[in-house]
Amino acid sequence: MAQPIPASAAISADPAQTDFASGDEIHAQVDEMFAEMAPGQGLMWRPLVSDGDRVAAIEIWKMPGRPAAHPTEAEYVVVLEGAGTLVSGGTLIAPVASREGLIEGEQIEGGISRTLGPGDVLLIPAGLPHWFGVTGDHLVLLGTKMPVNR
Image 1 (cartoon, one colour):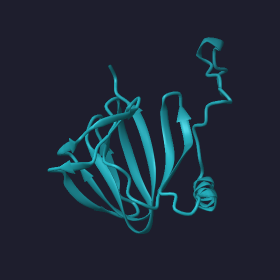
Image 2 (cartoon, helix red, strand yellow):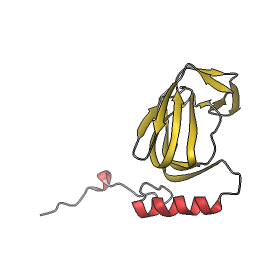
Image 3 (cartoon, rainbow, N blue to C red):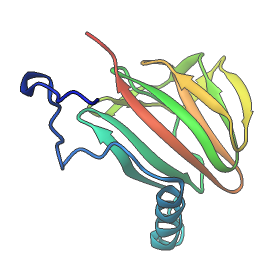
């Protein structure tokens, strides 16, 4: 027989917290984002699920971005569609703080290059220089930003 959960152990749901997205919802968001991208737009980023400062977002890349590092966040990435290249590690050349939590550079010197395709999984530690290139017409990623403990 099921026992009632004591009030002290109850978990309350926060309706503002989004902690689940079905495969159909992910595909619908990707389709919607493609439809909204302007001609010549190289990147679109949109949150999918979040838990406060941890956010999993869909990233659609149609052009390569700038080499970057996120000093206070690690990033866990799953390639959903398309193909591309990841260059990571090495040294970020001519680094400039673009905004809080983002340092961009002109190039990465001495990084490791990897070919990316659907199903690939990667973890980019906080502060590690990285760059995504696009092979073909797009690269779709599910990227989760994870603040590092201080």
